[in-house]
Length: 460
Image: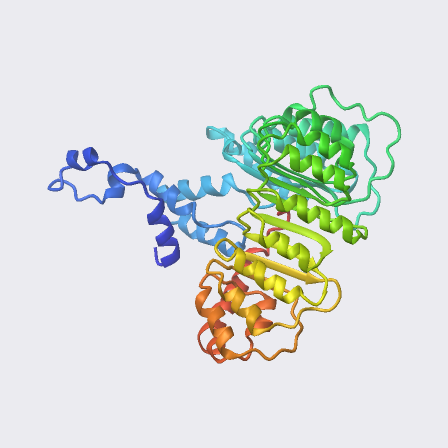
């Protein structure tokens, strides 16, 4: 427990002992800590290792060294590694995983039964599809599946009845599935003939709590049939050719949905119906890939601002000061905003008003601009400094500015949770307090974040 941060998280998660448990212990016979009264050694080790991520090689090395310490540590680290195995991005990795899973059953329960998250890729042409089907059959306890088909450099990849049958077999092998990410990166040409989708293809989608799609619109009939009240997160990604009418119609079934991300063009009437059906939405993202006019943008902001539980708003249509004031007066406890602004003479003052109006809840601010970036002012920086829970500043500022040291000092001192971003660096570089007390910490956090993503190949 040489890592203070890890130790603190661990101690917070340990259950508190009951009074009866302590009274029954005999301190003269065995001097036990409160945690030892209620946790066995395997339980304690499992709690400890749960706080160590597994995305990078150095993380796995920590587990490797722990596994060599004792039999108890070996068992604890092995189960943790098998619950969240590394991304199976290549056929070689998939063969090794399948072989290890299969032979582990020779001396008892196969370790595949412990796998909870699986991230795996089907290569172009689908010639490893049967291997992926076999792996899915070996890990029936998976609750979180990322299935990526091909790569963005693959060009055209047609969908055939054989690929539909393989997808159905993979999903049907995972009866406990709750979180699903389906991504097909190669272009899907027009489908010829009947895909022959099985009658029970909707069943794997019935218990889903989160679904992210990238393409896979050709599987929409079973998807829309199966999705229901269990779904909380729905992400319709780029390249997923689903119409606004289809999304609006499905929204009436998704009574528990709190997160909706749409990366396609939807009309105002569709958004109006969605907001009406999903009044409890907390996270909304609408990304259009064609130019939208001012009337459309204004109407979208008014509709989304009416959501009383709205915590996150991402919208790529260009809006002005009027829409920022609408958001400032909205009832939602906004925590994350990602907006595109266009200068109208009042944009800076309106942005300051929004930041101060939501200062108690905001955590992340991402602002881009229709044309030139924003020239930062001391008033704007002080508005950011008034947000005590602020974690991220992603505002496209103009590179040249002359801020007072006092406003930058307030930002650094009054926002203790602030993380490094290149935009933040543009604001604070040259400030004496930053150079003396904060620069090293921010750069260390930046390097740690980059390291954590090194092997997150198939992440969402």
